[in-house]
Image (cartoon, rainbow, N blue to C red):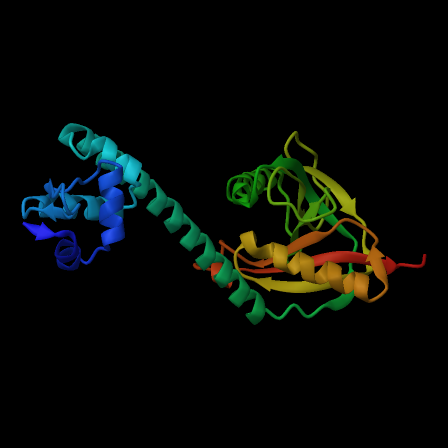
Length: 271
């Protein structure tokens, strides 16, 4: 048998802790000398103490340990529950790590991206037009080819150089439920259909334009830059913003190579 002092040294645990375990009934001494009050522990109690220490390292409270320590069945169920909790926590943290990595990537790309604003004219054009509300940018890959098929059926001839653009009727950048008008400049109008109509899109003498290289999901950076430039330079939007698609899925394998120009018509802020 071991005196409490020796037992504490063997297990690298304080005598204060052992006394507390005794008080709450978690680990009582094997023998207590009634005359001296000395506590003695047996070597068999080493296993019980090690289990207590192991469960504490897993994050269990003393109350939780006391409830399952002498019931292997309950301990098994309890540990299985803890494992599921930890697995769920790991998945949550992995998602957070992925989100952090994505944000860091966006920050790095934003730092690399040169959002130099150029002011230029947007010409008046005749355009094939399809207005719709889309849930997100990915929907473009489904509806634009259908629009192209309808234009070919109508006999439309695209203008050269090509001017494919989208007008945003929300008046601002949005990621979901976007009110868009997809336009393709053509040489002349064709008869309308339920899907595609032909109209003259007005021109503007001035528009603030920035180039964005990369996926459409990061276009918000370009919009933030151009609208800040507009405010800082004494302008305000004179019309709805547009996106002109220069390079995309039709001629570039990687979305990192897609090139889009954000165009915002301008007028003086004091008008």
